[in-house]
Image (tube, rainbow, N blue to C red; front, side):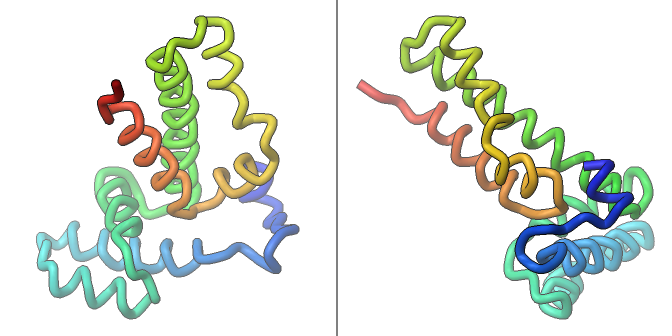
Length: 143
């Protein structure tokens, strides 16, 4: 992530994807939060202005309000969410009856998937979606 951020190395997809729009919306929403404006109408306005049809920038804005509105901080949040997905894979494997060793191998398997490593190091919402799907799968009862 640090390499990609500081060198602006974006070899896939012709650029950095939607992270520019997410960052711009998150900074605007964070500025509103810092001024005490938590209006859903203003949040929706900022999201529409930056072509965001979901609330990932709001998650970033909360973090930016607590820290500072820098893109690298948002990317570090995404990295922690990717780590959470690896832990959820491990827990899901254990829940399905795998041995601890096999569950560990399943948990570290995302590091061998290059596109997950690349896209998981950008300021994109996909890592949040993957973690939520894994969490729902873990919490779903099976018989």
